[in-house]
Length: 204
Length: 204
Image (cartoon, rainbow over all chains, first blue to last red; front, top):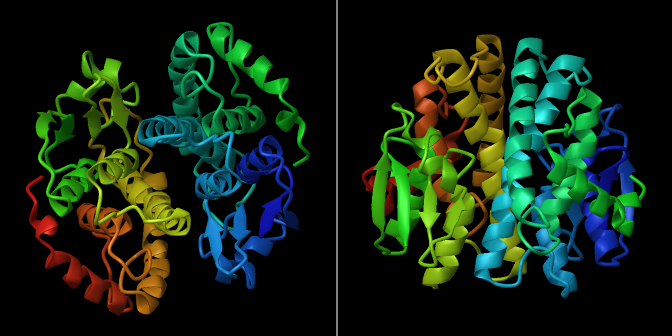
């Protein structure tokens, strides 16, 4: 298997952290997103969504979407499973993974893209919407605080891919100056635990 | 189990179609979204994301997110599995389900919310962004056309939850006048096949 990634990008980092957690080694190819390498052939032929990470399987087929790749690699490599061990835990972990994605990571990405104009060569930034998305991301922190006040990890009592997604999203959010505040002590405590895991320091 | 849904809403329809496909019956409670019933207790205590569908399990816990609920109900009810039969097919189906969600359903929802002002009591519509999101949704139709030109179903050669998501998103897209055109013959042919399935006509 071969992984297509990019430097300093939050979504591929989710897969790099999973590889570190599961002690898996893969060939990694880094794309130059600023140069638009993801927007042209051959990459675009393998992932029409033009996004990294992208995983090439041994049969030559491709999987896109960090959550999909992480679940596949997690099942492939076995215990300890970070995407759940039965239908109920898989559902709970995926639910929180998606809450973090839709409620925080995506709004942060929209805030960044629409207020910074970073990808203005390939999209139309609307700064007023960027501000709305940023506020939506800030509002989500109250939901995360509430959850972490009652649970050690994002999806409950065990470390999971939802923690990986949340850490990657929170670090990414610093580029738009969104971060946990004094009203989010449980997020701070959890974040410190995350930083102590070797996977947190994986190069990306 | 008990399902919280809403009338004429595209995401809960995904679960109602899955129930029809799998011949499952559940108690269904319809919320009044226009009245904001999803924004206040008791609903908001069960799903802080304030979204339907929401599934209450027999142990009293709750699952949110249509994709999560559908996978859970699919595994729970067994064959024929609409979320895949092995790691590879589960990954391919989930990849396409997410491509349709992020690349089409979400931009359509943003286009609707930001151009119509329908939820202006609970968000700040930015019409210029609504137009951008609409164009993004239109662009996705080329990706769907390309896939359906080579495959009978959205995720490949078997009907899956990705077809359900795509049908619900396409029907929803009509509210913002986005639809498949003459340049998308494979989408039209697939859509006709979808309309012939009894699940397409399930009341929502």
